[in-house]
Image (tube, each protein chain N blue to C red):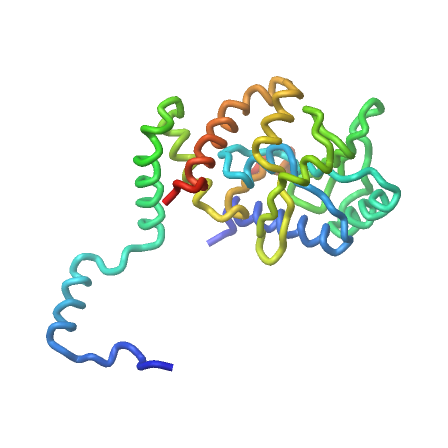
Length: 84
Length: 166
């Protein structure tokens, strides 16, 4: 099954952990997602000059989400108000 | 934290897919719901489904309406073959039989449709190119309004999901 991680107690490893922590640690998923959107938009923008930059960001964001998370329905409540 | 709009929409899609599976009704999501599932940043107030018009499917459709806790399917007008199902889900379901605008038959739409996962369920979703073709042919003001963003989405999708994509 292999050795379980985290057994090393070397000074170098401790220093590296402290250094990574000082930088803010592991990036949050939302930050990674935002970076991915930005990177894809930077790559695609020159290929699609006719697409508005704001629209491109919305489209790329939507395409990077799983299909079920892309849907947003507008529902009409019984009191006549519309909700997302 | 409360449920987000995306959570509610996802639950709606899961409930739809589950009911279709339970009653064994083969249906393809079309219209702007299909556009959304294909990645277009649009929204809609209903879910459009394309099914074959058979006696068996009509019976299954009645069972489907019951399964989602909705009223029986009703025609949207005397002149139209399209039916709608109100209640049960967050948005009404609109049923189209056999074909849609643009000369698109059930078989042709199904041949290009993609199966997408929603929760533990699956939904057949019309290809974005078919949605665009259908909206171009329908040519109503609401179709013309949404066509530019659908065309842009198709162009981005081809590059993002194409063979040269990273």
